[in-house]
Image (cartoon, rainbow, N blue to C red; front, side, top):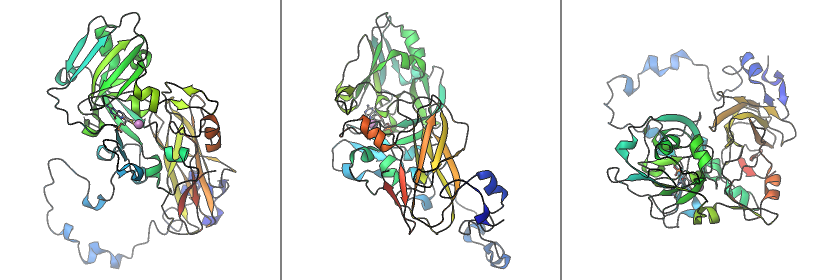
Length: 427
Ligand SMILES: Nc1nc2c(c(=O)[nH]1)N[C@H]1C(S)=C(S)[C@@H](COP(=O)(O)O)O[C@H]1N2
Ligand SMILES: [Mo]
């Protein structure tokens, strides 16, 4: 079978994985740039061994680091923010990532008032307000409670704000446009366990969570969510939290906007009404196009983005086979399906999901694609288990005021130009 014989499952060259694998083209002629036939006479392993095969290597270091050959894979400080004091938005290089777990050293980070250096021997967590018994915990005491863990996504409400705000699409990488999202295993103590111990007085409906950073970032959260699946997170991907992620302790609120995941947590106050803090009344309420304001818009909407290929990349060869791949997530639960279009949204095919989607976690999607060398646009559209479908940019913009930029979850379009360059476009 020739590669051109493979049946398309949608326009623009999308191919079912089954027929692609069955064709045997994967390692033969389908992707010459990926695998070459080896001339045994030229193989270094026979003729001359590389240095690393002739003598024993080193011992390693006490805390392992990535290979020096991967030193280019780092977080991005986003360009238009680098002169603001204390406000440091670092983005995850999601284009360099595979799977669904973000390495701790590459985790995006947002600190509104700098990164505090907290002594875990001094730091305490206090639970007070409308409780039967106010409680105070040292970190060592917290670590003696049962620890639960789950793999979850975390996304800043302002992720992809550039596409919401800019009238013309900015030619940035996917890392810069949408790198404020991560996947990690978070482990810690159930908030419910601690609140059951403190007891909650009948009027207690809200919890005011405060961080111990210079600006004391503070948010009000409904008690019901905290009792449901929120944790006092102490571990991230198997080790204690990194300072930028809230060491020694943060609130983790699965699926809800990044800002509610209070880092350096030192206080939970039970109240009857929300506090309407600066953070929730100002930055994190959304102006709608009809003149009203959305308050307390907590869950992050269903969203997906193609990371391969994506902005500023160049496809190495025309008329080649490529693996389209990306990430999808929803703050409302599991991803049900992701559809991909390779013909500017005219036709769509259902993408493969790499693993069974988990609740409020990233899932990786992919499909084989045969690019015919003509300019086109790639899109992905996620649907979650309760039926939310990722909106188009037009739909999103018609719901919100022109200056709204939080909770932007519209479909991302990547233009493939005739020279193989990939560019952010709207449409
Ligand atoms: N105390 C405190 N908590 C905070 C912040 C902060 O500035 N101070 N930033 C918030 C914002 S806006 C986001 S998106 C998340 C980001 O979490 P990360 O830095 O671990 O990625 O933390 C939230 N928690
Ligand atoms: Mo954020």
